[in-house]
Image (cartoon, rainbow, N blue to C red; front, side, top):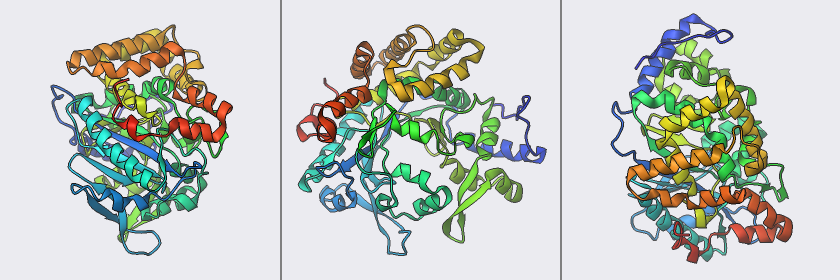
Length: 453
């Protein structure tokens, strides 16, 4: 794999002496991915769920740990408090899945182990969510299939007291608090070393397609927002000049170009004397002083939140832009993401051919539009979504696992021109907050039926 440092007009390396450092970091980063593409790509899901009281206010989900620990396969994981207190439980880990406290005290993330197909993911997630819903019900709380806390405002009061979260708050101030209320549905898909840059560019390019079909966070802080995906709409404004969120500013030419691009962003927090403390310098300045410090690069790269991310720790592409979904359609995002990745060889050139030389800019414009208008946004090419979805479905059929059936909710959304956010907005306008909470609550009886509607 060529790891040269290419240049174009207006995008020169600020300091030529950093070029060897970028190349070395790129080589080490690439080593985290296998040389050969797996015969059947494995997948893993990370799903975040808001947990609320009956009135929709965020709760302190740490109170669920003891109930969940009734499961003998789970063991507690501890983290250091930012408040000088003793270590506290930040998650529970088992052989198939784990629970983790997210940035917000009212959000729990469930992560599966790597699986051979989406039906394995579905069964693991169903079991994990069933236990979570049962534990929440014992406290008279609700688990939501929704992409943001519906009533509670982003605030320091509901931020998990982890040391790195407090340091990020000190580095970013109030914008960091947005993470205390969001809930995403992410999929990891195994990729090989030779396709890293191509998949990174493609994963970023298809971001608006995923949002158009899967946005589900139109109401937050108790009010209707101007966005179908408030998750992505608000995040787009956070450090916008650094392109830390959403689509990449442009396609990357090679892996060294990617390393250079993200290194220009601020090094938000650093490890110093055993503690994690805020920072405000570009990461390039750190590299200039310390050289090709790979652990520091990984620490920096972890806090770049683009919609498609290369994950060297797992050898995957992580697809991030989707909101958490209604539970009866809980596998929709995973099926869409996997189908899109498997169909890259067909969809990637289709988009470029249809949109021409300005394809990246046109998709960035579409990205802005779908965040606000969902499936009402004008498509950048005639019937593009239907053609792309057909290719994604064909790619899932080609896997031979029957996973294409999990795309049924996505096809219905497209046929009705109504994604989950657009449905939720109608409910909120008609029935208010109580109606919305009822609409997105995951009920024990529904957990058993997920994926079969």
